Length: 445
Image (cartoon, rainbow, N blue to C red; front, side, top):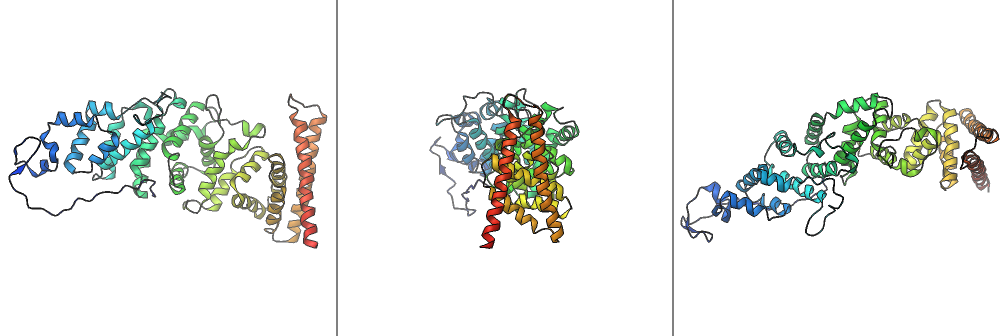
């Protein structure tokens, strides 16, 4: 795993220096005759444990983290301090519902605090095996209810899971993939995430709205949002999706990245089926699909990603808009897949709606024409290609006639959307064919 944090460590030499057995200590003016383990405390050994812990109360968490690297003995004392009620109160802040806790020079934000705490526990548990580190950290954090998938009564207005995500990102930065697999399995065991996902993807869309919202917030805030490198984000998204069949992967991807209500945060399902949506609603899905299509996402093939996109069955205009947001490579691969699998009529309708989206969203229409021209080269014979082109013209005619019939029948609303839809569709057809004429004439001159 690549790490967004680069921490330089000062190596303490193993060389033993000759010391006088009568070493002067300026803290207590007594001779130093303590054991070797206490000698690694330096001048702190003159302080009773209670005073040492009182000193820690005045140190920022970042400084305590640096102090943990001085010696194993000090690190052990810090671990003990973290486990005390005083240490818990000082370090495990739970002011997650206070929007004013944004941070300043004197007081860091909650996210910065838990980033520093993640680094502190990363250093204090450095010598422990991964399994033991996770058990210890869970023991420390187990009393924070807002760190649990269903622990907070108001997850939409709580920063707890975001803080947990920043903490885990800092803790696991630089760990190899095997260790990160163990982390994910450990989190699944604690949160019962697989069973909850099974319930959500097996239910009728929207029937488990609160569960969908909790899964969405947990996956995004804890596992996905805080990584700097796309390969890390792809790794964790793969862990979430891969255990499930393709149809469930598509449902889960929509739950995590699909459009949500601005009022209550719940996933909006009917929006994609009932009418056209905007780019903002689709951007999260498009970014996730591009993440999985990237060569660094080694566990995904192009066919896997295209099959995943194909499972997202919506209003065709919204599907076309999503493909445009996904970029040229994914859009072409998706269309070429339909061409080679004998789905020319579906492909022809998709071309019409790509042209419509270009018209409505002010993209260059020549892009849609060149994409169709590129797809034509996928067909094996001229007959197949000509049949496809005829299907495109038929699709334009049928879709325009359907829109016209809707206007004539008087199916109007306050915004007159049916007439506006026909207006954009006719303009899209005209501009699409205009670009074809330009392309044809330029090739002949």
